[in-house]
Image (tube, rainbow, N blue to C red; front, side):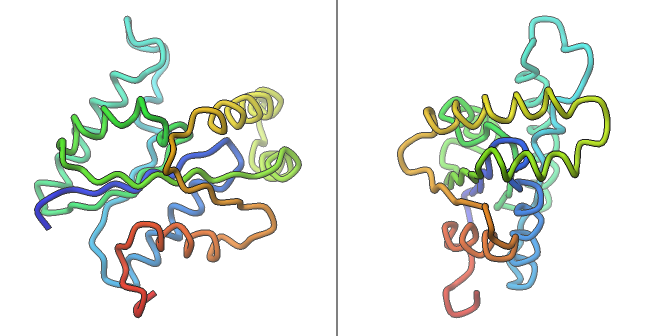
Length: 181
């Protein structure tokens, strides 16, 4: 493979992005498909934000470039990237700058109802940020629904197993031949 490919898994908090990302990786490993996984939510986690970078986009891109550079040097060409807003058009430039202009991008937006995400987040957010996380999750769900580009695969996670959702996501990549998956 002479070009890179990235699977972007986006969605609101509590939709199951991280769990699905790890299950996608498990399916790819089982099929012997070489890949790397990056949880993009951690690429810009610094406080305070660097001067001139209030949304931490610059530091996030620099960190992605450093980590992907290490993977690419070792021969990896496929990346599973999990991040809330990664499916949006403005992220495309970052992946083209980091992975090359010819990178093939597959966008998957995971969705879930407010009730489902509230239940999931209530079990996960055990500290002081649950109320803020619930508000932000609802706001991001609306924004993602409005701004996800045409061609983005939307996958509902309500009432489904992580295994079933991941199978649908992997199928969208074409990385595993149908006879193997």
